[in-house]
Image (cartoon, rainbow, N blue to C red; front, side, top):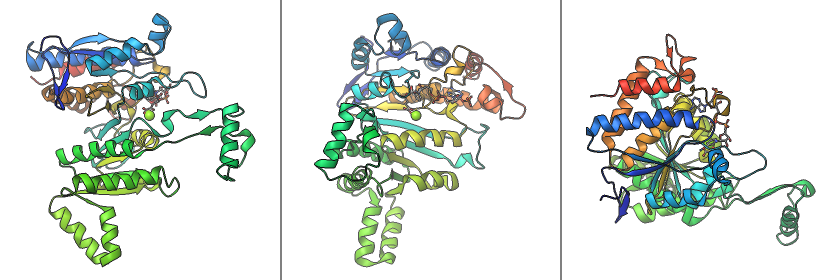
Length: 423
Ligand SMILES: NC(=O)C1=CN([C@@H]2O[C@H](COP(=O)(O)OP(=O)(O)OC[C@H]3O[C@@H](n4cnc5c(N)ncnc54)[C@H](OP(=O)(O)O)[C@@H]3O)[C@@H](O)[C@H]2O)C=CC1
Ligand SMILES: O=C(O)CCC(=O)C(=O)O
Ligand SMILES: [Mg+2]
C-alpha cells in the first residue's frame, strides 16, 4: 500500500507504514491541546518504529476556523476527506446553547454513521480523585451515537411546527398530559431496534474479546417504556439470539425464576458465570449513577443510549480525576470509519493560554493507535503518562488537588511526556 490510505478489507483495517490521517484542530482550547498531542504522537511513533513508520497528518477544517476560512462551519470537503481516509482525530468544537447551528460534533457522528461512542474510563495511579477508591473504576462505555434526543427533532415554543405537533398529539392520539400546551417546545426521541442492536453487538463483541465480566444496559425504561424500555428488551433479545452460547442474561434469569423459582435462577446464573459466560444485566439510569460511586467494581462494559451516555461519560470521568483525562472514539465497525476525540469540550475560558491538560486527546490518540494496529505506540505513550503523573509533573487541573506537584503548561506537559517515553 503506497497511497497512504487506511483501508478496510473483509472487516480488517489495513494500515500502510505512512498513513495519512486527517485531523480537526478544534475550537477554544483545541489548538493548544492538538499541538501538544501531535508532538507526542510523532515522537512516540518515531521512537517505537525508528523511522520505519510515521503519520502524515492532513488538516481538515470544522468549526470557527472553517467558518472564517470558507464561510461554512462544516465544509463538505471535510466530510469527504474523512470518508476517504477512514480514520481521523479531532479537537473539541463549540456548540451554541439555545439556538444557532446544531452540534458539529454530533453532525460528524451522524453524517459518517459513527454509531458507537466508545469511552474507556480507567484510573492512573496518583491522579487526584474525589472518591476513596478510584482504582476500582475500570469501565468501558458504549454510547449509542446516532439517535435519541440527539437526532435533533426539536421545535421551539410558539412555532407552527410545535403547535401542529401538540394538536396532532392531543386530537389524533388523545394525549392529555401536556401540562402547558400553548407554551411547550417539543422534542422527539427516536430509539430503534437496528440502532440498539448494532450498538449492543459491538459492546458484546468487545466484552468477549477483552474477556470482560459483564455488560450493563443502562436505561430509564420504567418511565420511557417504549424507547428506553425497548432498548433494554432489544438488547437482551440480541444477546441471546446472536451470542447465546457465550452469555447469560438477566432476561434468562427472570424466565427461569418465573418457571422454576429463585433458587434455580441463582444456580443457573452461578453455573453460567463459573463456565466463563459473559453476564448481560441492566440498571435503571438513576440508581446506576449512585452505584457507580458506591460499588464501581460491579460494573464493567456499559451500554446505553445517547443522552444517558453523555451524562455517564462525564460523571465517570470525574471519578478517575476529571475530564482532563477522558478519551473517546466514535466508530462504525462495519464501514471502518472512526473519529477519535476527547470527552471534554472546548473549555473556552482557557483558550490560547497553553494551560489545559492535553491527556484526553492524547489518550484518544492511544485508542487510535490501537485501532489501526499500532498498539506499541499506545503502550509507550500510556507508560510515559504513568511515569509523568507519578513524578507529579502535571497541568493545573491535577496540580490544584495534588500535594507537592509541579504545575506545567499544556505544552510543558507534552515535553515531559516526550522525555519520559520508554526506550
Ligand atoms: N465533543 C466535543 O467537541 C464537545 C464539545 N463541547 C462543547 O464545548 C463547549 C464548552 O462546554 P462546557 O460545558 O463548558 O464543557 P468543557 O468540557 O469544555 O469544559 C468544562 C470544564 O471542564 C474542565 N476541562 C475541560 N477540558 C479540560 C482539559 N483539557 N483539561 C483540564 N480541564 C478541562 C474545565 O474545568 P475547570 O473550570 O474546573 O478548570 C472546564 O472549565 C460547548 O460549546 C460544548 O457544546 C462539549 C463537550 C464535548
Ligand atoms: O456536541 C457538543 O457540543 C457536546 C457533545 C458532548 O457533550 C459529548 O459528545 O459528550
Ligand atoms: Mg458530553
